[in-house]
Amino acid sequence: MPFTRNSVWVQSASCAHHKLKAARGIGRRVNEICCKTHCARVRLSYNKWITTSEAQVGTMFRTFHLKSIAYLLAVLFWAMAASLPAHAADISPFVGDYVGSANVVDDDGTETPRDMSVSIEKSKNGFNVSWTTTTYKADGRIKEQKFSVDFQESNRPDVFSAAMKRNVFGHEVPLDPMQGEPFVWGRIEGDTLTVFSLFIDETGDYELQQYDRTLAEGGLDLSFSRFRNGTKSRSVETFLKKN
Image: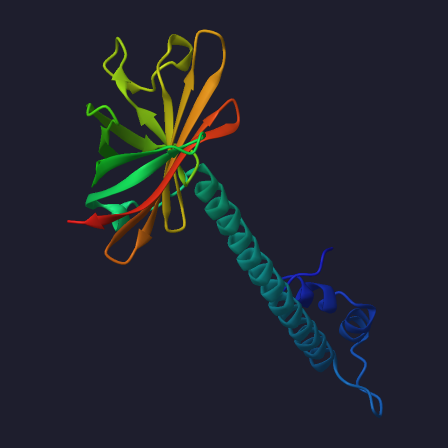
């Protein structure tokens, strides 16, 4: 018979000592306890033992249970965090309108004066950069170029893809450099907002333009570089004042 709280009295009552006393009616000898006292002590001793055991088991179970819950919650938290999109860098410090001028230096050392302006605005899923360059040629000609690019968040926290046209479904997508269109992307690294533009011509040669706009007191420090097949062919550095 297994030991339980309910069976301990039956177990002790069926002992040889109890049966002998009940059958023969023999009285107690010196230093001998009666059946009632004997069985009561058995029950008391067993109940004390099982109560202590239950308490230890209960404590172990509760400790294990709490540790298991904490572990499962930690795993769930990290799984949820891993499934969330990366947090994009903040464009807010760069937002504003800026103007400036500089001399553009070509690879042959000649300089060409140029006026520049840029406007940076925050959008729902990213930001927009619109800039204008006005170049004054030596022969008196004036050439003005305007660009506007919407940047949207990517699955990389500090890198933004450019959406420059809409496909047949109405979604904005980057232009195709293999069709002579520029491939543009942006990056925020610390205090610098960089815009890259990649062009591929019909022969497969490429041109990469890089605009670094770094936060400065009162505006932005602009550093522009143009690379032709990996070789720098034009550069300019100037300060753009915030309006």
